[in-house]
View 1 (cartoon, rainbow, N blue to C red):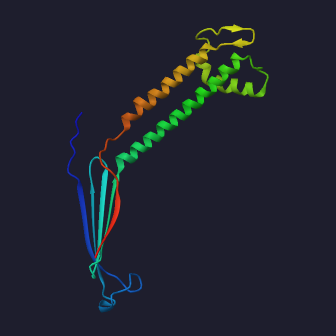
View 2 (view 1 turned 180 degrees about the vertical axis):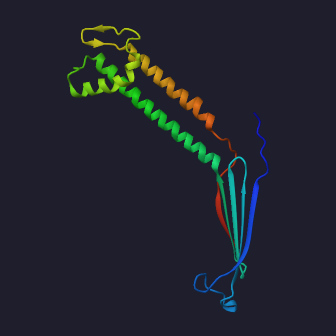
View 3 (view 1 turned 30 degrees about the vertical axis):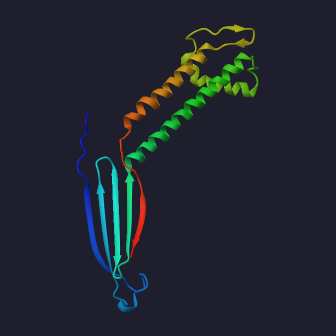
Length: 187
């Protein structure tokens, strides 16, 4: 699907105001109390989510202050999706680490009566419940290789990849602009 971008929308405001001696900058000696300041503000927004704002303030003495800000809303949205992807990998990594620890404890024949081993077995068991009974687990005495746990790690890793690589990019907004802010003083 091809999207055509329309012209940016522009809003301009120009106003001349009187600055009081009590609230504004110190007045020039020749124009005490009557210093005029002109404000001009221009705002434009494109359909890609780029908002550009430029403000110009010129006083009677000719001092000009320009403030220009370009805000890329699309890049902000992409950053949020990137953070969501990091959160998904954190959760998937925690689940896989817990299952991996369970596999190691089963392989070395850890005592299931031990509090730590029981905690790991119970916590990982929540995520392994759909996989138990899928295939057998070879054992020799107390040593057990839980094949369903290995399958679960592959499935959870693939699910994390699917979410981060396929689903999250569907919500990405494309944008080719940059963000910059600067001030320029002119006399």
